[in-house]
Length: 326
Image (tube, rainbow, N blue to C red):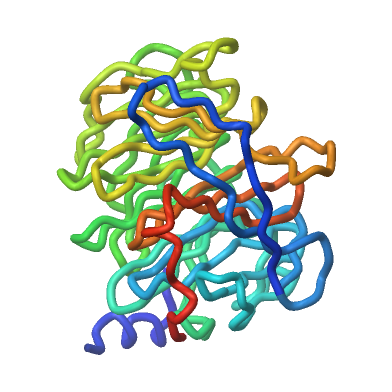
């Protein structure tokens, strides 16, 4: 359960650019994104990354990265300039052990899910620790390798409890509310849920790393449609669906970690774009693990295998964003 500090908080009012020509667009008129910026590189210093797992962008287009192997959160401007960091290896309050997911909640709360501490830690946007909830196990409110987190406008917190093959729902103060899903491949069941995105109608889209598909659920956890994106081969298949994000038009971007692609789906599941994530000339597999979209429509990809953040634009009109402030 959260600390009293968090309860009071909730109640209180140089990066490098590189070209990319490896995208494929199944839809004839779908614009192909171009890699316009990349930052990071493996290391422990400020602005360096070590196998970053996820990314989230706030309402000021500030970029938050779960720097998994460095056990910290890093905050950047949209042009890749480092702002601040917080967290250190450990299980004490305010410490982190392999942070894997980030979400923004009520009154500026930043929820961070840790897959090795099997918990959710909560901070404000300056990195001040507010509280934590969860523990290892398979009971209500307990986790086994939680890797993704999302918040809806009503303040509900959804956690992808990957090795328990379910999604758990909490109040903003960490109170357990409900869960849905169980291990299996039938519609409504899950195999290693690794991503959660919420559309404008409040529906939940759950991407499954082991199930290789995306399923749609209502906010109450009822199955709204069967899986799509299934398969091991072919552009419409998902080798290992992981992080996801909606754009302003309601299209869903999903990272395919093993195949090294980002796929863009229409709300009805039709494949619109198949982007091969750039290896930036390294010859290494990028293993993309998450995506995010800023207010200008730019696409950010976490290249876990390269320890870098890649920013893709769809044209010169959406490449701005250097002037955001902390």
